[in-house]
Amino acid sequence: MRILIRLPNWLGDGVMATPAIESLKTSYPEAVFTLVGTPAALSLFENDGRIERLVTDESKKSKSRILWIYKTAKSLGVFDMAITLQNSLLSALLLYFTGSKVRIGYAREFRSLFLTHSPKENKKKHQVLRYLELIKPFCAVLTERLHITSNVAKKNLCVINPGAAYGEAKRWSAKGFGEVAVKLSTEYDIAIVGAPNETDIGTKVEDIIKQHGITNYQNSVGKTSMRELIDLIASAKLFITNDSGPMHIAAAFAIPTVAIFGSTDENETSAWGNPNYYVVKTELDCRPCKKRVCPLKHHNCMKLITVTDVLKASEAIKSK
Image (tube, rainbow, N blue to C red; front, side, top):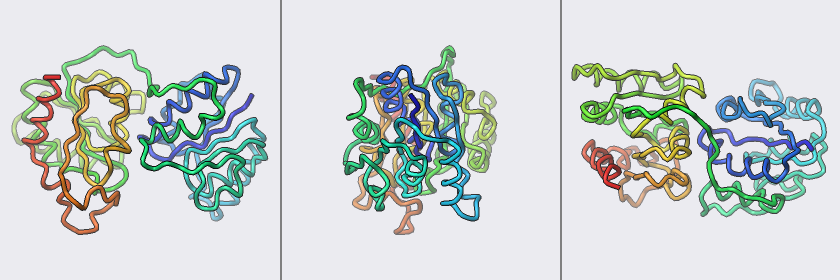
């Protein structure tokens, strides 16, 4: 049996999709999988023996995205089941062009024309449950557990993640992260993590740490593979982060996590299944706006969060 899955674009969404993908693997033990998606999402599955093929979606680089999708679909061939966990019209076209008889995805953007099974999405549910609801009719077994593995030993380490891919409205200040790192460096070694396009944020955090003469830290922003990032987070005793992909990696290992939420909704994208988790947020009428940039220009949902707020949350987690 061959199953095609078009992954969601973002790293965090890729992590939150792992229960659905694991449910499919368990329900179809003889199946092999082809995954299509962004490099960030695909990197989560690089060492998975059940994955026959990882295909990077490079349609944005093509003069015609539809032509690229058509040619890619034809090269992949027909599948017994094709599923899109990404909500664009183009992802539904990918499934349609393969000629697969079972094509599954949520109904939006006229996609039902190209899908055989297209239920309406309940956007009030957590993202993990929305992915599971989509594939539930086709699975004999369902698991809600995030599925990422690591065998590293624990270290006396606090990992700081000051970036967030969706936009600046999701990011607390680099200054705030730096000052938190300085305070926590008396108790933990510090590691700063992030994507290659977040090196400027990592440098700002590092500069604040260096100004205080702190030496027990490492700046790993943009320097780790996905496997190295997973192992680094899995080895931590504390994780301080924005709402981001690495937050969901930490959740898979139940790492004590302080998550700072601004424009996004903690009810939809919280650290799924993590009992050691504390959300820091402001109670403003304008949040969550779910915008990439603050539409009111003040960004108070993040600016009003203090270093003391985050440090208090860190202490609260220790006392759980």
